[in-house]
Amino acid sequence: MRFTVDDLARPLLLGARVQRIVSLAPSCTECLLAVGAGERLVGIDDHSDFPEPLTAVVRVGGFKRLDLARVTGLAPDLVVAASLHAVSFLPRLETQRTWVFVLMPRTVDGIVDGMARLVSVLGLAAEAAPYLASCRTRIAAVVDRTLRRRRRPLTYVEYSPEGHTGGPQSFLDDLVVKAGGVNLGGVSRVEWPVLAPATVRRFDPDVIVIATYPGGATRDSLVTRPGWDRLTAVKSGRVWELPAYMVKRPGPGVLDGLERLEEVLSAAG
Image (cartoon, rainbow, N blue to C red; front, side, top):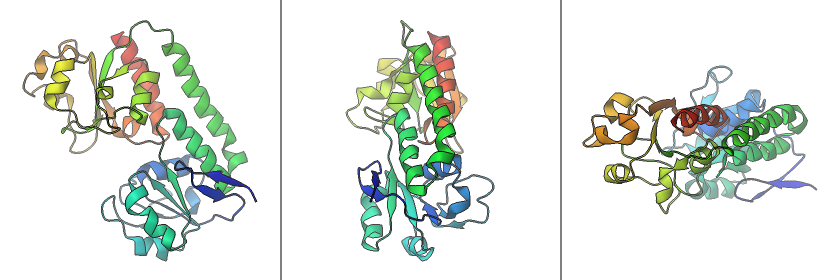
C-alpha cells in the first residue's frame, strides 16, 4: 500500500476511490476546483462563494457552526479541512472513521505542495500536473525578479479593521517576502497576530495593503484613523486595496496576489 500525508503529516492511503468530497473552508473549495475535483463536491461550507458547479451543492455550516451531522450524513469519501478545524472538528470526524485531509500551508509554495498531495489522494495527479507546474513557474518567476531588489519596503497587510494580519511562519509572511517586501506582522511572536494601531504608527510602513471584503476597511476609512494621515504609506499614496482572496485565503488565488503585490512593492522600491 502507498500513502501520502496532509499538512498535519497524517497519512492517507493512495488508490482509494474518492468520489464524494465535503469541503469545510473556502480555501479548500478553491483548491478542489482548481485541480478539477469540483464535480465530486457533495458538501461545502457556507462561505464558499463560488459560482457553478456549486449552486446546488449542500451547505454544511460556517466556521463557528459547522453541522457535523450533515457532513457525515453526506457519506463523504473524504473531507477537506483547514487549520481552524484541526482542534475543534478533526477529532470528532475521526471518531466516526471519516477520512480528513487538512490543508494548512505556511508558505506560498506550501499551497501548491498541499494541492499536489491532495490530487494524489483523489487520483487526479496526472490530470492536475500541468496546472500545478504552471503554479510553480509563476512563483519562481516572481522570486527571480524580487531577489534582485536592493530595497525591500516595510509592508503592512491588514486583514481586518481590528488589525488582524499574518506573523512569522504564516503564508502571508512568506507572500510578502516573496513579493519583495518586509512583513510588518513579523514583529509579532505569533502566527496570526492583532497589531494595535499604535504599533503600526510606530513602525511607519512604506506600503499598506488592505484585504477588501464586505465590512472590511477601505483606503478612505483607513486614513481617517487618528494619526494615520502622518504615515509614510498614506502621505506617499501607497495604500492599496486587494481582494481578500489574493492575500487572506490560502488557495490558488494567492498566486494572483503574489504577482499583484510584487507590482505594488516594485513601485514602492
